Image 1 (tube, helix red, strand yellow):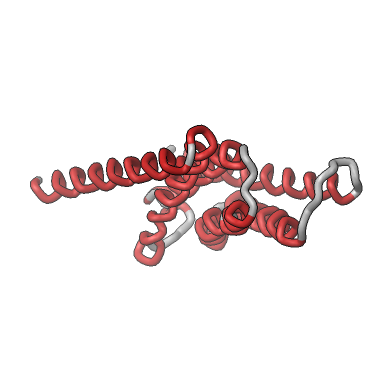
Image 2: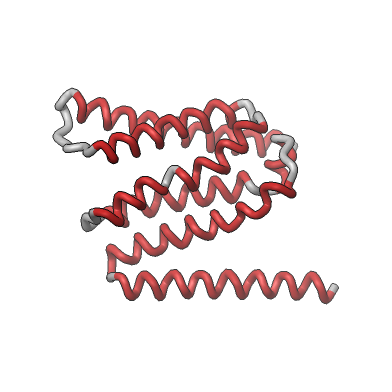
Length: 183
């Protein structure tokens, strides 16, 4: 029964990736034909294509629970945010953080689920090589928190929120380790 539920969650993540891809392709197409007035710089076009193509690859592999689909997902989910974050660093417009944060949060949740033992087992993935990627979940969560708080109250408060989040998660991890060693 657990395998059936895991397979359903993988398919939900696959559909999420497909919807994100189709949204990016649709946005680009509407801008290209002039229906949507948006000036897309070459970097923006690259970003849209990268996200759209990576989302299609994630969909194709995860839908069938293939090991290559899992690996592609785990690598491309965090990497798909690199061009967007780079673009925000170059030219930030108020509101980008609030708009991006929920999507980053959803991707962090998807990545967390993909890195769980039962998901790796279903996709025939060895935990040894891929375990270090768990840091990417915390990185995406920190990024979502920073961007959301940044737009709401500013840089200093966003940095404090992320530091508090990292402190709390590190403390929780330390407590779990301590309990494990004491039993």
